[in-house]
Image (cartoon, rainbow, N blue to C red; front, side, top):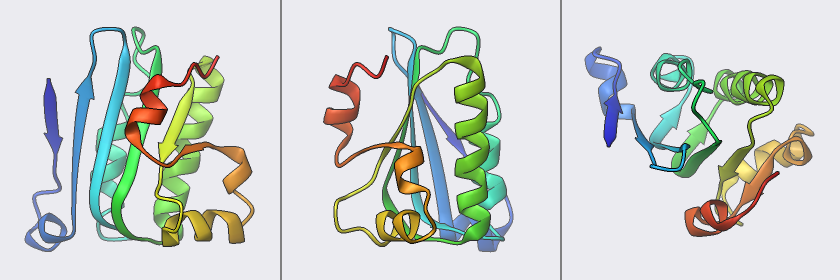
Length: 129
């Protein structure tokens, strides 16, 4: 089941959309498309705030369609990492090899904090435990 999460302000609607799919085995795939910044981070936060749910086995956060991520967006990634880690739930980020977001995470010293896959199929096939 896909659940769209949107900020209803006109500006944010044009910049970021987020979907969430809960798979039958407890994995959750959250996909973001657009820019994550001060204006749109609340849209991502709203999609992530329910995770990890009690029945969540793993979280896959697909960021392959994110075109920009500010420090506010990085903070949202750190928040979900903290919640997932605290609950013992694997979190995998999906980011293309050459994506600016991957370079940004590397430059600020956060890349090694996350399990990062280059595509969603690899993230879903991984046994992160």
